[in-house]
Length: 114
Length: 117
Image (cartoon, rainbow over all chains, first blue to last red; front, side, top):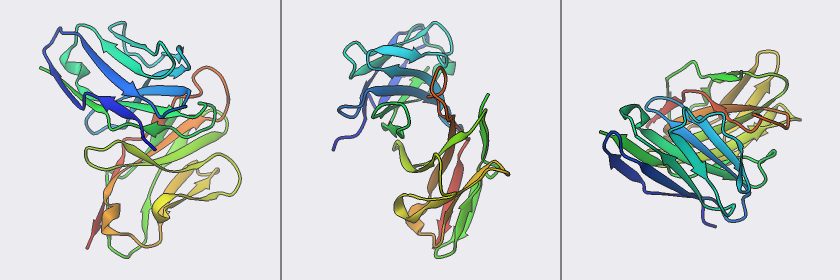
């Protein structure tokens, strides 16, 4: 079946602009996660959704970052007033229930802030 | 706080030889451990997990991993390496409890495996 999809695959923006990154989880998966992977590092947790609500947003670095999942399926990660330090690959993952199931990752969105 | 260490940035192995990619972890309570593989320009692919039971777990593509509680390690192994196994490998841990913060996966920095023909 279809895996996790993310759009766009690449996004180049200028410092100070607003960006939205989209994630389509595996159909039926109730849990959704966002991670950020900087060059040469492992992914770092940003936020976790169970259904429509953000169950854990402790990884968001500051209030410029926000994510929504209004219908419990597609999620959008929103970054305001982008900074060069936000440049990274943003990964989305989903899992069946979120309790003990493994997370399945999408291919990521590579964000470059000039 | 939980953490994962992958002490080798790169591992080189000849095709057909056994391979080991090392991982040690730190977590409060019992661990829930994972290995993922990342190919260039592709997302992370799940290989295997350990939650409880037999210390040797088997996963995809002939990989296995051995959990050692006393050494807090979870090394990835394969008896005979293939050139196609060349990729970036990540070990990850989460706490084995329900509740706030428990769903976060903490990843190591990754180990680049190169299998030489």
